[in-house]
Image (cartoon, rainbow, N blue to C red):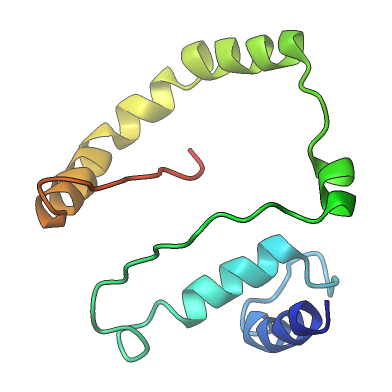
Length: 121
């Protein structure tokens, strides 16, 4: 927890470069990760491609009780339906750019044992 607090404090400094239009707000994990990815994404910090291999470990029991809650199948089905039908215009608008990015990414990956994870939309 001390390490996490130190990281959030460091990233809050980096996040200060991105003003919040609604005024000052506490730094959340989302904003801290965003600020950290922008701050550490420059070419002077990482001129070489990054490999992010990590071993999976079981989270602490308190975290499991807090975050690993049962899923609501109806809500999940409704969300999936909305994404399948409501995102067509968005997907059509960004399809060319996504194809370009994935083509560039996929040609740079090894021919075997490559794993691609898409986060977000």
